Amino acid sequence: MNTAYETIIFEAVEAGIYQLTLNRPKQLNALNATLLDEIQAVVAALETRTDARVLLLTGAGDKAFAAGADISQMVDKGMVEGQSFGRKGQRVFRRLETLPFPVIAVVNGYALGGGCELAMSCDWILASDKAQFGQPEVSLGVTPGFGGTQRLTRLVGRGRSMEMMTTGVCIDAQTACDWGLANRIYPADELMPAAVKMAQTITKQAPYAVAMCKQVIHRGEDLELETACVMEEQVFGLCFGTEDKKEGMSAFVEKRKAVFKGC
Ligand code: DAK
Image (cartoon, rainbow, N blue to C red):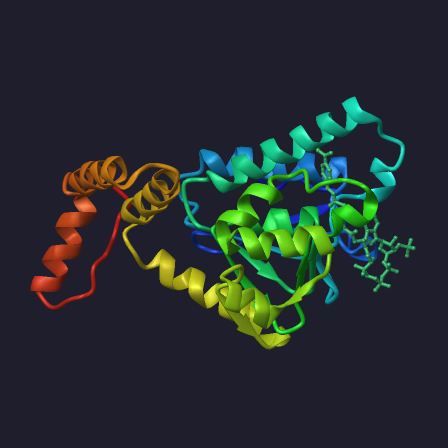
């Protein structure tokens, strides 16, 4: 995990909490092929790390989370290459989305195009009061290509998604919050401390139960209610087989703090 990266910074914040920072601030953290490969490498490493409880994903500098896919790398691509680039981004984002613990996007400025799509691949978004969200791809002659047409629509509904994608106009943090795209807004200098505090609250909970909440919410979203509730029932039962369930409930009855082991 100590690999040196060219376009990202990956670090442990404290036990269980990791931070991935997109680190091309001069290019407003635009997502180039190297950056996508480096996110993929981190995600692959995290998939099998049993100590990981939360990943915070943010952008370096005070202007952008990410201003989109790197236009300079797309300008000469044709149809087949464009599709291949889109596939690459989609696969990385999907892998990030399915990490077995919460991933929080900490959006400190522009989250445009692929940047907005990356934030939406996280479990939820915390925004600074300077954050701006947009899908301006139509101004470049393309559609969103990293899952935006689907994730944005699921998050904010068809009308708002259509408005954002067909006008290309950005929305501010307050509108993103009102529309359900972002969960909370903080003053810029309080954003990361607030994100870490939220991550700490998560690391105090039973890890398996947290992981199962994520799995059932994600998998259930696209199922009809009856099947999704059966899945919830089964997962609920599985939790009863864990040491942490015994510990959590015993601690409550004994009026003490639970000490979870993650099994
Ligand atoms: N790509 C490359 N460089 C970028 C960039 C981007 N997306 N955004 C900004 N930069 C660079 C600028 O070129 C500039 O570089 P220098 O000129 O200094 O070398 C530097 O970052 C600072 O940007 P500005 O000088 O423009 O800064 P301003 O504050 O004036 O403006 C801005 C900030 C965010 C309003 C502006 O930079 C801007 O409009 N950026 C582009 C935003 C955008 O259109 N994003 C969407 C990108 S398209 C697909 C797969 C994927 C996609 C599509 C299709 N298929 C499957 C087909 C994904 C598409 C996208 O994400």
